[in-house]
Length: 533
Ligand code: SGN
Ligand code: CA
Image 1 (cartoon, helix red, strand yellow):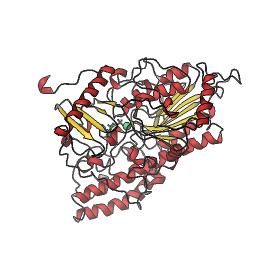
Image 2: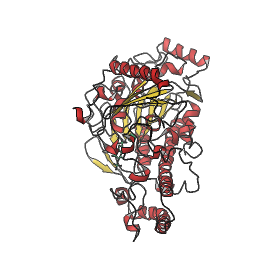
Image 3: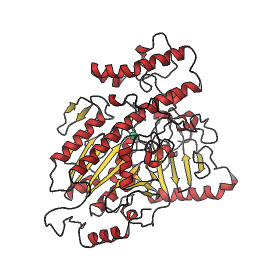
Image 4: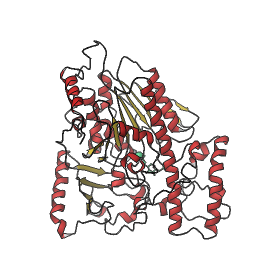
């Protein structure tokens, strides 16, 4: 829970009481000028909390996030922040609508977001905010509710990316996508209507697959020892049998050229084990001088690796460890650019006198596996991909250095933004405004609902669940299995307790809780196993 100093709470009550944050948003002192806070939503793709130092996880000493940590230091970090459905498009649709996937209609990647439905961006725009979204969008239909948008088509690219323009054309820009997204965001801030408050969503592609770093960051982690997760060699015993069928292991499903950056044309006679499915699309996009820098870094390292591999010096678990290190060096390097660019935006706000009245949030569409359970990717309701970073700075409203432990979810962002802007949320949203938590209100939810609907990418089955502060129950309808975890005694979620007689009443309690949430949210019926449908 947030603890705001008493004088700040009084000051805030004064503002609210006297209309400073009134629905019309007009200040009493300066008639005609809208003093509602600006909102800057800095967002990335697949950034696990374990790769943010402020979360204090096992990689806290190597995560390159001084600027993201700055938001935590000057504001707060929600330690128990989660997504509703751990996949890109659905998370974004939930953020815009404040609703679970089944209610906003965007249940899986590849769906088309219905632009006619209510979004917080539309309501802010209608109430007088200037609104913009720049960067990754991934919702198929064009953005609505934004005065300005410039977005990556689909997943977008790391090098020399193309951006979709508001007039329907596509334009290519030279450079690295994280830098370019930020430049565009700052250009928009510079050119905005200064008479209005603004809401800017600056949404990065990184650190999403193919985990391709800015060329200036190649090698940044070569001298760093990256701790190995305890579960890197998980055998998937004692949990749903669907785990063993996954296709997201660093060992068996990490592509040599695409993910590990060892191109076919570098290998000579050396045969690497599968997989090697997707080629080198990012390398192919580079200019000759960019490729030269890339080759100067990866070339000698790959040569050494291939010679050691051919000599039988790297095999079995050591090969997995080699791939894990390569993966993490690349992933953390892409995070380094995200963090630098977060710093550029924070600096811009400070240099332009905007820091005091701007709420800054850093978040990412879901978590990600950094080798935990042997995985990359996300999707599962296990902690690493269920968790979602949420750091927020709002001077005068959130005490610096706050660590909140309330269970929050991306359904909560839309109502939060509305309350910050002095607006009432429609009553059919699933989320709740976080604003009362900033001043210490502890009347908060005790459980979260999760639903994953994808149809097979990375071989993760549909599953549904509930999480409380201490326990998690997951239902796998395709195999009709329940998994129950006690997160206090088993934080790595290695053994389901659903069949343990000592947990029988907990199992029943959580099944009831899950059903209550499903009724409350009017969730659709579970899918049926093929044999029974
Ligand atoms: C792509 C990736 C997958 C990833 C999904 C979803 N493959 O399909 O590894 O899980 O996106 O990611 S890739 O070959 O295109 O890189 S999401 O962030 O868009 O949900
Ligand atoms: Ca994502």
